[in-house]
Image (cartoon, rainbow, N blue to C red; front, side, top):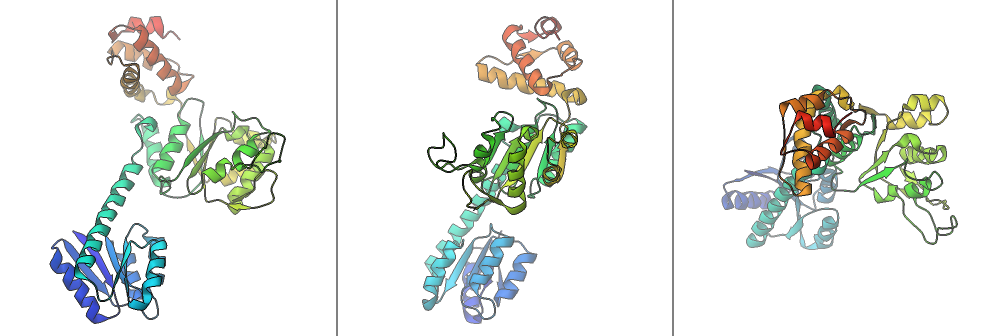
Length: 387
């Protein structure tokens, strides 16, 4: 059933709209509000699939209702109802996010067609939102151990917010997967996810990479260039290995977090950015702070939420399901049949010391699929996965 709210101060027009919609489709549940204030309060309390809203109303007009509603429930389509003198305003409301407008007195066919189209769009938006919140297969977090389940639960709580997250853990544990999950399950998922490996960029170039530069800022700056923060606007920037970032770059990141502004290298002009920052490191940042290599104020800005990703040795119960997942994925990539691992082979692998964590396990599974028999045996493991 589609729930429709009609906000109209003229009782006669309101009754006509309610009657037309109710008689057109039995699945339409239509409610009414006699002014903008009541309409907005009704929207806050209940969920609706569509709003028909008059533009010219006393005290609170339709433009104000639309503007307020877009902040609390941006997914609800609005059809604006305009008098002859309100057409220019009606067009402007579409720039503000309204779906369409209809003129008074309403033409029956146009009204019903517009309502059906708006409801269809709402359904597509909801479906798209659900799909985007499903994490892509390339970034699945595999495992059901209590350690990994706790992280998944934490992500579900934190992702819908804009809270900054600091992810810690050893190399190869899957910190980048956590970052992708946080983005893909957030309200920013339709906007960019920009990843920056701070350890892979020379210290003299990190500021330009993050904040961009203007022509002539340094020898090789032959033209203006936007940085990663600008590229990530409205989305998420993932600062991987942030413990390797230079102190001067840290100062600029701190300013970006404090003021939501950045400036390109060589420029004094401020650029507003709306970015969620997720950071990761394999270092103990508190030790780095004590040794003067990391700013304490930046640490506290980043570590609103702390997520520690466990080593594979601390989640051994996930090893069998990880082996199955990697076996299927690697076989598909190589174009060969998936191989089965014997119970003894799995038990042997489960007992290894995985210093390289999940990344090392994946490499071992790939080696066994290439070099092992049709069924991976204990002997294959001893021969090709010797530790």
